[in-house]
Amino acid sequence: MNRRVLAMVLAGGKGTRLHPLTQDRAKPAVPFGGKYRIVDFVLSNLVNSGVYSTYVLTQFKSQSLLQHLRDTWQFGSLLPYQFIVPVPAQMRTPGETWYQGTADAIFQNIDLIQRAQPDLVLVFSADHIYRMNVREMIEYHNEKEADITVAAFPLPREQASEFGVVETDVSRRIVGFHEKDPAAPTIPGRPDLIFASMGNYVFSTDVLLEELYADAENDDSSHDFGKDILPGIIQRADVYAYDFRENRIPGDPPEVAPYWRDVGTVDAFYEANLDLRAVTPALNLYNPQWPLGPTREMHPPAKFVFDLEGRRGHAIDSIVSSGCIVSGGMVKDSVLGRGVRVHSGAIVEGSVIFDNCDIGRNARVRNAILDKNAIVPEGEDIGFDLEKDRKRHFVSEGGVVVVEGDRSAVEVTVLDLTPSVERRRRKTDPSP
Image 1 (tube, rainbow, N blue to C red):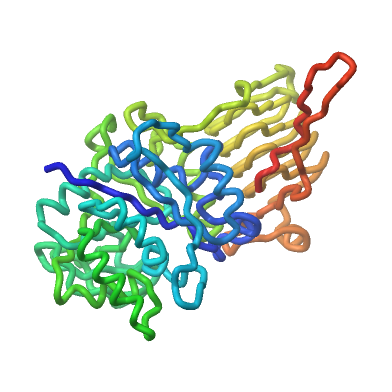
Image 2: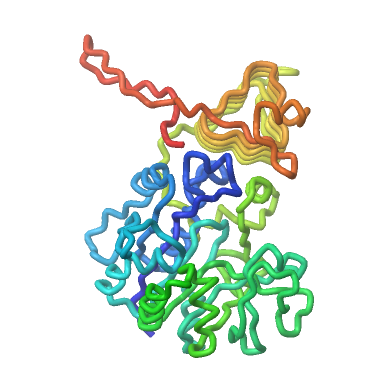
């Protein structure tokens, strides 16, 4: 069955629980895995699944996100249905407000849906780390002849208080929604598991438009899909849960289980990054049939220098991105972004290092996240004395130290006019 599909990606969240990493950027723009941004996962899933028409709805602190979309996700296609376009709040409500909720974000851009005239509208979140074959979810939606399909991930029932939970019958028809309720119903036949909503929805277009108009006129609504629209529609529409455990990625071995993480807190974000360094990671970034990107790689290869006792540049069980120089230092159980420098005698262990950080001679960094352009001075210790660290840095509940980067850093172009040759001098990456 051929269906016209339009995707609307919700990328406007504040990400307050991920502070200070979201102090100057939206959560979808936070770097992840050395060279990516969180938003790259949902966009890669859509493109790899053959969905080429996508609007990205932005809002809070969106400059870094807009710059990333411009630099890495412009198709340049001559075909009108192939695009990834960022869309700010259109102020189409009577009060001319910013997006008031997930449903209001779609309603403010309802003209884009009406002009495209799709059969199905995908409403996906840009906040999570996962790989998903969206085509399989669409096929399930068609098989069930559903009006709405909600992607759901089975989790231990002990985690019900942390997520929105969908209640289903044995056919997976949704019969209830429970928001962070520790007593939420479990999956039929699985008393140990609950269905957590992933925040990804497939809507039949006519149903979506009807519900958006009705919700916009309801002054008592918070204009949110999970809180308002979906709980109210389950009695009059066919709403089904799609079990994410059944999703398979082309090129992955059949025994590989689907991976999904809500990186809403610093600790969850830190742990998801370190998941990547495993010998066989649960999240595979190296499947050529399901690439993560695209990205325009402008950095040189990583380099490891010096082979002297006490001054050997090496990395163990780590991800080291392009442009890094490990110069006589040691990196272990860590993820390094692009352009990181680790100087002689320095030790980086169990840490997530964003782009263009500099770890000085004999410095030690442990159980930490270094934001872009952060500098660790020579001989400095991070992560060894948390009371000392709390006086200068943010420390999460799990003991992860977050070191802010140099927010004044800029990139300039210097012209040497004598030989009439433009020479570009890169100080640091300008984007937050």
